[in-house]
Image 1 (cartoon, rainbow, N blue to C red):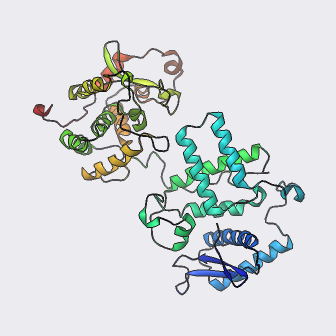
Image 2: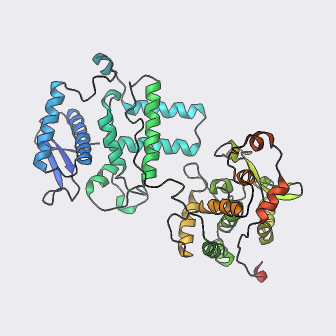
Image 3: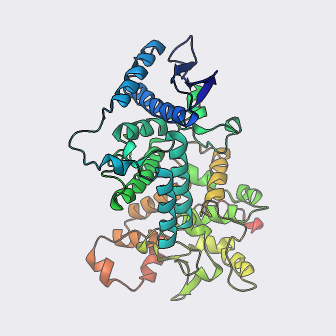
Length: 441
């Protein structure tokens, strides 16, 4: 939403500038020459978008006097009815534009339809709602035909300046995203990967608008920020010294006095290569014996369990070191009154049980001296895969163990029976590296 102030009866655009733009002024003010608040908000929103886009494209040209000249030119163009849309862009009749629903109403319809369809997971619903809420906070509400490629570029530019952990940082309490961005204060912005994730979710909304014929084209189609490294390169495997530091059971026991999952999630992450959410949502009846072998079953057998994809369903033999540490006895205690969650203390946030464990693990690894930001809980998965391949395990078997889709027709379609003995041998090649004194078992 654009910010306006009123002097006597006239409204002005009042926009805070980043500190580096003008050492003498922190605020840009421009007379809108209107006395109606709604009209002022509309004009201010339009000018704010154009200013943001101009600053993003021309970072060395923004004296306040120059901006005022540009604003007068933009307003004159709007009054004369000129359009920034290319002549080749499909458009509807002007009288139809006048009856358009605003994008905020369409967003409500989009979310309702997504919930009714049942294809969105709870965490996905919350993420879509948050992305669209931030979109309207940054851009204001528009008629669908008024949101053009110019506004789309401005949205991308603003997204890249959004702060990390906006809702959790105390210094941002009571401030809107626009206020923080316009304040000129220094903060760590969200990553390029996060920018692109949010662009995709908002673009999906515009695709829905296109499919339902509310717009003639998706202005966000194909728009993304350039990423320096791939998602795979952003995460590293753990080194042997990292594993030694992280799997010190004495340290983990101290961490897990109140929360037993702190011990077992680290151990299981190392010994199974499973995703953190797959481990957090385990039930006691997911610990099964198959062909005489204790295994963890990764599946969606309970209503709240979700899988990333169909190939994620699998069996993983439990490593002897994990059994020796007492995991099966722990599961039995959790199962005393019948099947229940293995880690019942965990509560979902945005539909994800792994939210709190991920935050805790980040602090824990720092305490243990693993400070590289590319080494996260998911690094256990990379380490598991790397070590199996280094041990000469067949790639098809590695994919079975970690829930990756098999590229081979032979193993993907015809190999339906789980090769338990081969998987046991594969898992046994790993040295989990649990550091524990025998007398503390």
